[in-house]
Length: 109
Image (tube, rainbow, N blue to C red):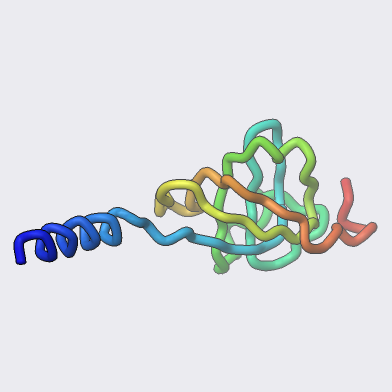
């Protein structure tokens, strides 16, 4: 009985410690050497400063090693590593980023 109770407690601890992986997708609005700003809608040729007052969708700055290879207008899928700082735009680290759609030619800067 003690062994099965101990095994059950260990199993509950392991399951409780496993945080779900948060994923998302969106369009790259801005990119620099260490992070990218990802939003829900495509805004070709515009910056965050230009749209932030009227924009109502989700927005997140992702810190990622792949940011140098990303460009505005690309649609990406990402997985969050750790938690999300729920500011606006939100902030998080991404451990996986994949381009799922290239930028339209007119949105490349």
